[in-house]
Image (cartoon, rainbow, N blue to C red; front, side, top):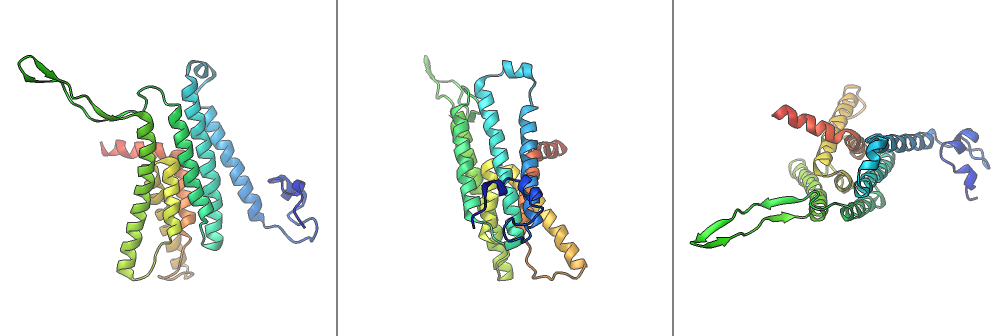
Length: 266
């Protein structure tokens, strides 16, 4: 029997039904409730992040283009969180990262980036590649070769595509090296697509931060399992779940952590 629409309302239906199916009485896993709760909290945090970054007075002063880009960024954060929470749970339970989430997420992220590019102001996000100065080639002769640069939209779109390709190639290289040394697969292609999806939404360096945090979390968890005798050297871990956690942290605090790290190096 199809699920009634009023039995499929996030959080509320689970509470009203007391965690059981209305028709057959079978229990409904508490994981569904926690996933819905986590997603709702994520949307709330992103909404607060978007709306609290400027006061009402600044809202009036800022351009509509700036707010369009700002709101699209918030939408991207909401979507990537929704996807990462779902992927985290799915990989933990099934060791599978569906292409509909990872590849679909990449497509959504690139669409949002292209939409953001439409609202960039003149010279905004422009990147000068080479700068040529005016030179005297002969008495009375002046040549200005001009600057070679990416416009804002070109920089934003091509930069994000490069981030996706770079993140995917990095994990593919790690995967190939592991197989060459250990003669067995150590990482699935789903993890490669997941990191590429994070890069599509957040950029290259936040994706690398996600990889670092995910690897660190997986290492700590694996060490704990080894110490308790519940895993061996060849045991498989749901690395996508840890990578998703790293992506969630990077989505909220990535720029702050990266800037703090850069400041330590100076």
